[in-house]
Amino acid sequence: MIKFLVKGQNIETLEHEIIAADQVSFVKIHFVFDNNWKPLHKVVQFTQGAFTYNRLIGYDGTSCLLPSEITPGSVKMSIFGYDTASKETVRATTVIKSLNVRPSGFEGESETPIPPTPDLYQQLLQKISEKGKDGKSAYEIAVEHGFVGTEVEWLESLRGADGKDGLPGKDGKNGVDGKDGITPDMSSYATKTDIADLQKQIKSISGISYISVFESGSDALQKYGNSVYTYYNDGYRSLAGFAESYPHFCSAENDYALYFNQNDFSWAGSVFVMFLTPVAITSKMKLLLSYSVGVSQDAEFYLVKKTEKTGSELAQYIYEEIKAENALKLLFKWLYSDTFISVMQSLENVSDGEYYLAFKGTSDNSHPMVKSIKFMKE
Image 1: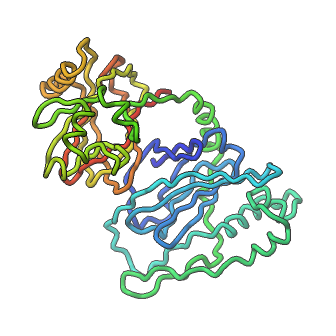
Image 2 (image 1 turned 60 degrees about the vertical axis):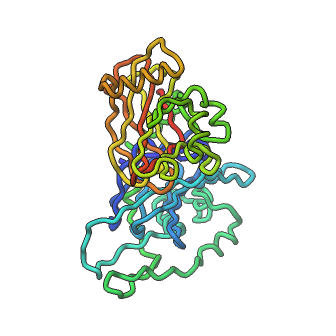
Image 3 (image 1 turned 90 degrees about the horizontal axis):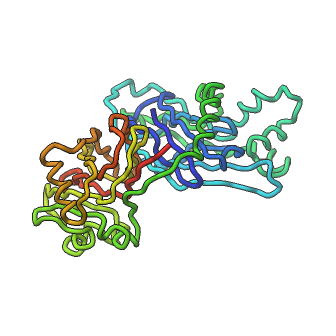
């Protein structure tokens, strides 16, 4: 399942899976909205290259389908919404969330048409046809579903713009025409079960809190300079000392993210990063990571039981526990992304207790850049 938490102007990953191209009306993206978004009429917007596709969610919806026109590569996703009950125009937006769509192995017929994603007006018309039996005018219903403006402006908006031609097919022939007024498939709209589940999740959002282990930013070296240690070929160092010797590892050029780069470490240099502040962990918590990485491969994250040691002595203890296989290894993979993504790792197999977190990054094809590490408490 692909699921995101929309909190304020940010979109955070709750559940993530690989997305393959060439899928039609199959990839469903689910959203959990915080209380600020609850009264808004919401639209999800996908942009790839020069093309933008909108998916109407409305007031009560919780999911939408990925547009079938999306091709392999990076896709920008964002959400906007209007508060139609306000006397003033109120529009909420989010920052962009990048999705990575990978090539598929599909080798179907090149003449098979891909149904175009209906434009926002066509989707609105469908909603109006579903709800027009309540005696309200089409304009009144359009306002209820997010239109901002007078009735004259609404009538003018019905004309719309000409659709764009589709992309060429695999045999070089032109694809089907874009947005042509076909009545959309509304199967992606939320069911009563979806809405009930959303309401339960909204109630629980206020109970979510985070323990931040690392956050990139201009103050990172000041905040973590002596509480984060590294182990590399030449031994143990604090983050502040390590950054002086390896100037691309935690620097302004990447907003002080932890970057396992080949300029500092050549090819396949491995650096262990150890966080010396213990975290009280329960099996209900989750580990949240924000990073970019060059290739999908096994990740090496560890939890080491708390001890009374401090400073470089503690860093040595953590590293030696890992090498002696006394640490708890968290089993998951780096997921390829050339932009920052956020992923969540379950801790359901971790016994309750206080632990130090540590991980290894390598300057090979993966060369990860880690922006933030948090534990989520519910």
